[in-house]
Image (cartoon, rainbow, N blue to C red; front, side, top):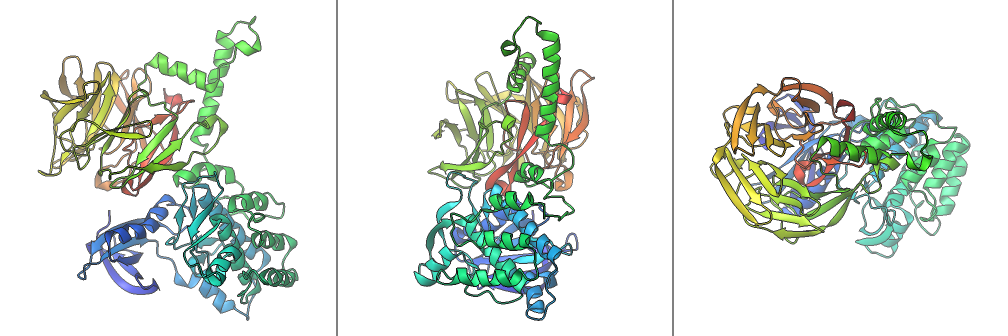
Length: 639
């Protein structure tokens, strides 16, 4: 986490708006330099509105063509106003596309065909990815773009961006507040803003409006001349035709046709970025090979980027589990099915195979086809629907389900019980016990106020272990349980953890055994110790084995009769962990490092297991104020 006192402002880089300043700043603990974007607000409500840019940027960390954000912090000024400071990657200002354009304006040299093509393809690729995860920039212009040495484009300034929850029901068409710079507005927005004098709202497709804006930017770059009036509904089409005719003298028909598609005045006929990418990237004329191979491997990008990670050359988790399940099926096919059986009766799907595996190994898994997100300190509830099924290779996206009439607390603990009882949202900075079932939040019996405790559900009871008392500022060793049928909390005074701990992870092995792993203790720091709770004897014992690395805020899940995986979390010195450890009870109670997940981070939400055995890990995003990242991991080869 960043703090105001950790930064020293070195230089004022610019002021994009009257309430916004951008500084070059030194991060004193590391000596590194960042861009610090400060936005001033008169109210907390306005501050939260400005926070949206940081939230949006946090969803696209690690994309090579998007300006990196590293975090943000708030502080109050001496004038009783508030400031949001966003810590951003510092980029060489001389590569800003607006400045580069001004240098070349009317004097040249013109960009070469391959240079212009790289710019166009890289921006379409980037904005297509953003559309795929439900984000629209809404202020595309040269000053918000940087040109890299490779001639690829890097996008900055998401202050006007919109989180559209990737809802494809209307394809991006919405009655949205008008955003953007007049010179680069789409014809629909130009008409509403300049002619109809409606400065607030217009019904339009936000993605297709950005496509037109991008087309105007590239038209300006290719011409090295002013393009004012090209978005005017009266004579803009004629102006664009004349411009494209001029450009055809020095650029190929491939470039001209891409620009023509982007600058189509008819919004219904104009492609979105996703549609444009399909046409551009499959053309024989596209020869750009970026170092990330985003064009050649766009299907892999589409799979990996929704969890905001870089594309990797190794097979995705879904590909791995599909190949594993194919081999399981072949084995089952050759060993179990009689030769006299007809084809219609001797086929087991991947879902059938995994269902059998769960029953045989007595796994305690959440196999619901959906996951819900509850906004830390807010009211929003999001939903991730897996009903389309990973077998269909369809990406899963969060959608806004609705809002709770009150605000959720922060750092609550979520427990999935079963299909009958749904999910429980426990504690946090409150003593609430909320039951979420069938899109309804019901307040249950109050619990003791605490946060950062681990919890599991077993046979009608929710067991909680440890936690943090924010009043006395101490870790706890208490163990409490909640009887769902009785709607009553019980304090198990005879059972105490051997070490006071918060931020631990609890996992059920069987009906009589629960393990408590790791966590945090004020004196000892992040813990690597393990405790065992015997449900039958009601006793907790400290185990002699320890985890290879101290961990907190991670997750654990049983994957076979004798194996538990420990996944993700945070190590000492706040180092994010992407490691997967296996606790093997058949091998002298040993814990070994097994693998890595595609992205490390805090795992506070229950793990969801889909119909073919993929683990869906939900990693904290922007301190719980945005829907978590869905990271998919296959475990079957280790089971």
